[in-house]
Structure formats: structure tokens, C-alpha cells
Length: 67
Image 1 (cartoon, rainbow, N blue to C red):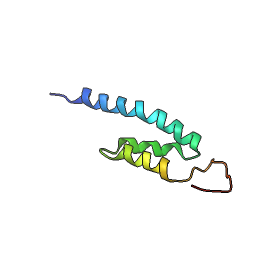
Image 2: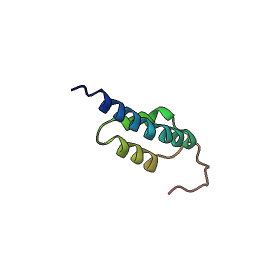
Image 3: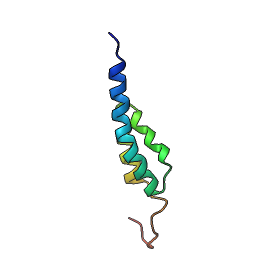
Image 4: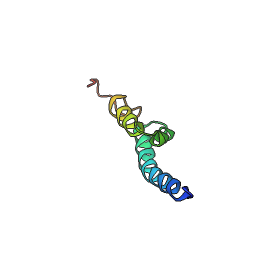
């Protein structure tokens, strides 16, 4: 039993998630390579969402008050 097709499915699914997340990181002002966290099993997506939700975005306009 060769498990190569399963590996291809995982890589293709990861790339389908990685590309949009890398674009979100780029628009937010972060390095798009942070999107590689997608490939961490279990909690990679959670780390991405936490980082985007809790860190101040570098390209965010300063309005004098922070939330």
C-alpha cells in the first residue's frame, strides 16, 4: 500500500488554505510566510487566527485610540 495519494491530498488541501491566508497576511502588513503555520498539525490554524485577532496590524491606520 503506497500512501502517496494521501500525502498529495494533504499538500493540496494545505495549499488551498495557505494561499488565501498568505494573501490576508500580506494585506494586514505581516510577512506572508506566517501562513506556513497551516502545516502544523492540530493547532496551526488556531495560531493563525489568534495572531491575526490579537496582534496589532502593521498597516493599520493609527486613530489615536486603541481597542
